[in-house]
Amino acid sequence: MKRRDFLQTTAAAAAGTALLSGMPIGAYGYSPQLAALTNATTQSDKVLVIIQLQGGNDGLNMIIPLDQYPALMAARGNIALPQTSVLPLTTATGIHPAMAALHNLYQNGQVGVVQSVGYPNPNFSHFRATDIWTSGSDSNVTLTTGWAGRYLDGEYPGFPTGFPNAQNPDPLAISIGSVVSNCVQGPSVNMGMAIASTTSFLQLLSGGVDAAPNTPAGHELMFIRQVVSQTQVYTSAIQAAAARAQTLSPLYPAAGQNSLADQLKIVAQLVSGGLQTRIYVCTLGGFDTHTLQVPATGSTTTGTHATLLGKIAEAVNAFQDDLRRHSVQDRVVGLTFSEFGRRIKSNSGNGTDHGSAAPLLVFGTKVNPMVHGPNPTLPANAGVNDNVAMQFDFRSIYTSILQDWFQVTPATLTQLFGRSFPYVPVLRPGALLATAGPAEVADFTVYPNPAPRDGRTTVAYDSAGGHVQVVLLDTLGREVRRAVDRELPRGAQQLPLDLSGLAAGAYYCQVREARRTGSRIVVVE
Image 1 (cartoon, rainbow, N blue to C red):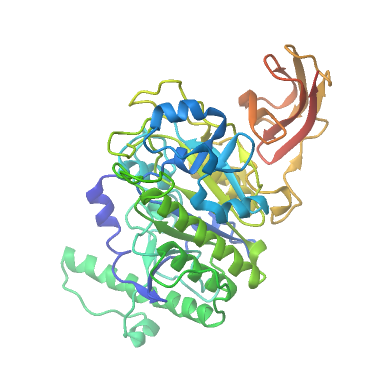
Image 2: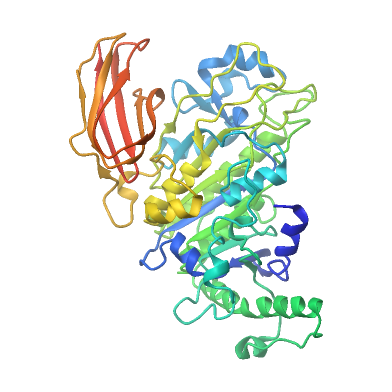
């Protein structure tokens, strides 16, 4: 999307803001398409919290490959952490010591890590990369719509007239802060509607707005005033929910010290207060660390990036504690994302330049608390243009969470994102809304088992048709072999699994297919 077009179409959304605990709040108005996205026709109390780390987060400084420290030090010796300071998640993977609170949550089963999330042919422009993540597009496709607003043009050309209404009094999604997300950009207007703070409540009740000149500019002004007036109903609903709950956790820092914590405190208050909003968007900026990511002198465990990582950990930890004290912790899952990662090799300014893939964090009592995928492979002598290779497409994470958490159908997800993406079990099987978990892959067998080293075994099962992944994980949850990652036809499958080069021991073989998954222990002798 062109920057000017983006600014023009978000003008209505930015027309006004409402303040709650000193934070501006924007509400995404109801639409049948957004309802379909969150499966709003089905009763649900599930909540998804999305945290955008603006600027491009250095994933190699957040989730550290302990098994490749010589290569890491060779590539970024001026910013790398002392290995002894890294907090271990597994024997091969660690986390920055500034995120000790998240390390504790991981040990308590409330944090998962997805390695090397990105998309093919990455773009290194902040604006374009953010556009890709929020629109769900390929890097070579420029979409003028967000992934939730694409359906609005033909089916509801009069939007936002008529919403909210008695059946849908609460917004389906809320952004807290000054940035309006592009994910709900429609063909002609942005569906991300800011909640205005005005005193014209009588106009709100009557649906009227002040007169405007009968000119093209006047018509635009009339529409903006209509949006501002309409969203006051959302303001009332939000304020009513906030009045029904209070902050219970003592772990939040003082107001103004951590903007992400300030935002998540409001989310916890609204969720606990009974607002039926399903998606919340929060932001934390400052991750464009080209220079002085760490201090010019002193410990590399401190500095700009360490402070930012500490804020994430502090905010999420307090948020989880608050939800627990309100007894709503099982209703909420969250994820972090950044528009891109950073290069493997640091620069001479004690910083890092724009890169490609980076780890993504998921949090909540219902997440699968493991490290998904192996550490990125680092070259022995990384050059200035070397990047972390993508393992997981970000749309796989989006679609897997939407499928499991909101029970969005595969057909809707395919329509929304243009095609299907491999399933990634970032949530526990028991986290699903309507079922105990993804359907088990029936009659999934591996033979021979035990299997010989430097040989191969066969994965046999009946495919339902569609995109299939067959992966082998070690006992720490690290992916050590990916046998299949492609579309397969419906019917019986006999899939070879190469075991050459693997050490003797027990492994987990997983088959992932749409809403079905299966896991078997494979012993290599």
